[in-house]
Length: 94
Image 1 (tube, rainbow, N blue to C red):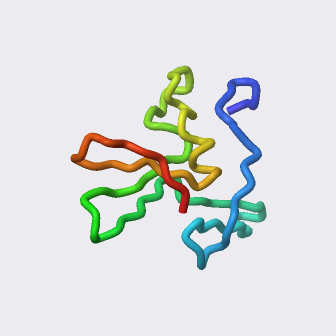
Image 2: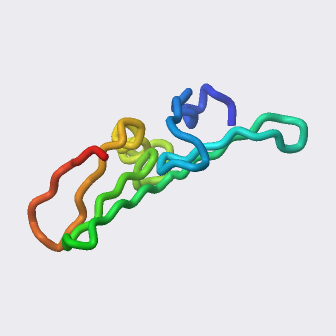
């Protein structure tokens, strides 16, 4: 898609490499540089009844939805939302 359509939100600087939690990799494929990053992160403490998660972008794949990139900043900063059956929700950084 052309850049003026508003789909690209970058550049996004990625931390880590393929051996870290914030995995990322640059490699050559079909004579061009390509990259990948995990779009969904989930961390859990088996001693809690909750998981911590963030999603690059947001929960909607619709470009003009307010949720399209609603969580991108949390993903970049490594801030996670607590998802639990218990009512208190909070963000945490790992």
